[in-house]
Length: 314
Image 1: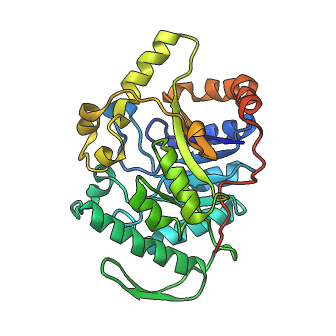
Image 2: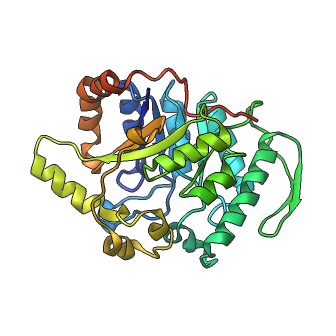
């Protein structure tokens, strides 16, 4: 059985529209909702990039039951990990414990805005190691002081946080990152539908932990218009994550992109977040999902019984 979610894509909607979309997606019956956390859109044509955490606060209070998650937040440059922990704890409380913190090592396009340069991949992984450890410690309560290679924390403490902490999902892209994060994360995130990632994760972490992917779709009454919209607005990910992580700007995304097809369910992912391409299509897509798409998906793949995206296991 597979859980099907809805993507609140900040790159193609304004903040008020995103909140309205979140409510509509919950009413449509999506199993969970994820939100991107970027400073830039992937392409200029997408046209938006509101601050995800302000929108998440509004979404947490506007919705009632649907689980929420960042897909994903980078806690190594644009945000300090101590601040990420505070934001995540607050959203978790606002949502009544419905929030999972999705983390990744980021991409040049969104993190370079703070002027710190763009570290090599192995350095970014080291930074994410430290960041996750800091966030975990803060979720556990009490004062946290750390002096690491990349981050310093001086007597930090979360004064408002859920007693059970906040589940953490981490993005992986290959065997090395699976082995690195499976022992410490509550769920796996991957942007490519590779069965090898699922098998490696299950071997290292246990098959009961969620594996979360994301599937773009372009829906509409006109096939040609839907196809053109997909080509125009969602060609940015054709090169895969190892390419996208180092692209410096929206022009680079356009130059490196092509159309891709994905098959997360077949690869063994337990959660698939759908992305409807095109901001103006969201209200109609949610109604289509309610009446036709979600019933058809559940008839084919079964109704998921998992209450949320991830439960903290440590």
